[in-house]
Length: 363
Image (cartoon, rainbow, N blue to C red; front, side, top):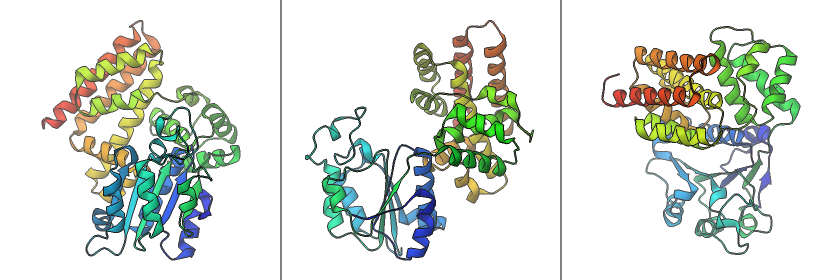
């Protein structure tokens, strides 16, 4: 049934273990830590990009075909010493995870295994010695479930339950140091109190502050004004996809739906700022020829790929115009009598237009 390791001890354990574990099950509500660990595990076993091209397979569990996944688990690519398979959002389709009222039918009937569970049960009977399966799940396995009982003895379970207060403070201080920023102890503690202990939200709000302060090193009390104390709705990320695809009408429609749900416009703007800051980082790394550093701009490979694709079609002038419009929207929302909906709709219309021109080769 495997051994449990804390997130902070996982990489040391894998280093000392030496042999390849058949399964690493990373679970819990702390999505940021889960995704960071997935990236670090992949980096450990597939350090070179050419090995990842043939030795890494990534699946979203709701979209995975169980027979195909089972076949992939048992097949080693030609010329590769090992394979790493990443299976994300496992909680959405497994009938073996802990109950969550917000999820669908997969967990409604205990005792009835989902097709994906059945595929894993077959694989766990004789896992490949040259394949590492990394499963990421927002919830853990029920200990009386068939999947939990069938886990290979050498499987590793990693609970990501979120930071304690002191761990969150240490996390923020580390991020500040990495970014070359300085903040007093009380500032950091107040920031954690506002945002909460969730690593993903802490990182996102820090990104927003870094954009807000620009090149200024020392952070002050006023910088906390841009911090949001509640999570963003998922629709905002659908908005980002529409903008990146250059779908002006669809982006404006999504914006109207978000605003009609009483979401504060400044909070939506903060996510747009966060996104384009990542796009800007990717753009500068590509211009400097530092493509190998792109994976370090965000722990999620999907996010990195998305912003990298978007950055490829943007010119220096286009990037400057984007941030000019973002700043102008911020000023209008805070200091003008224009309806916020009008400001935000105009902003996403412009951003979508920039993306469309980029795709058409206009930069």
